[in-house]
Image (cartoon, rainbow, N blue to C red; front, side):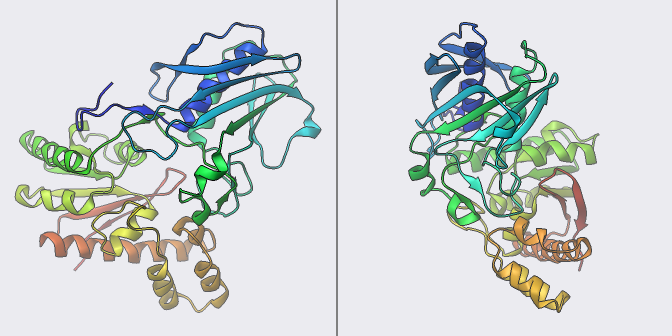
Length: 374
């Protein structure tokens, strides 16, 4: 399968691979022969087939492995081996680091094994002190085993591991943001969509032009899959063609809107991207521009005299962690100031004032919509 934008092969996320391994191990554990190629349900409700590396059945457990195929994406976890081990356990064997899923009066303890990181900071997508397995993959795992025969009033351990995950994680941002000991199991769609910068930027230009041709007075520049879905709840009448995913290319996307003079341009994002917009960054990819909280600290120093809070912010690694330490009213004031700075940068880049920012939380809730102010 290839993307229209880049003609590069798509691949599967660590979350999709973990789900495939879990399903294969679960089938084998229940004495159902698992095929070497296994079909799983993705968040878009479509079934896709992943090829397994191995399946082993023992007296008290089963284990399945898969080699991640990221397609043509230069993913650091490409070709990593992800495994899932399943066995029955007692409730006393559940670890505080486990994620608990309940299905049909049975309990599944989803655990990060060797090579999977542990979340040691607050404010990330995965709760503090839990294995670094994100909500998206957890939902995929549940979706793919919930309709099978499950022994009630039983607890099962689902242990996910990644070969050489500790070593590979050192080449990611995990140690920086507070995930230690391994990689993360991530993915909201299950699909890795690769792109070359030049091809993707050109595609954004084409999509903005297409929205204009369709007589759209309002377009949305969404940073990712979640924000592009969430904005539909805010503007339900907006056509899909008017919602454009821009990834990290905020500057080019904003500049492309100049000649069309849309009545409204909404930038749908989350706090991490907002901070980078406020800093005036033209490419927000973490590889080039990791999170820098100095601007947040500067704003807070003007809004609050609470030195303890400011000290906690200085020790934070991400803006979501920093926000965790702020009371709700101070959170919103800080984010509002960042939004105003971001909108001022957009106006500087374009000399236009038709921008607004729709900011969403990591819990997928609208925080506010901020319009440009003089």
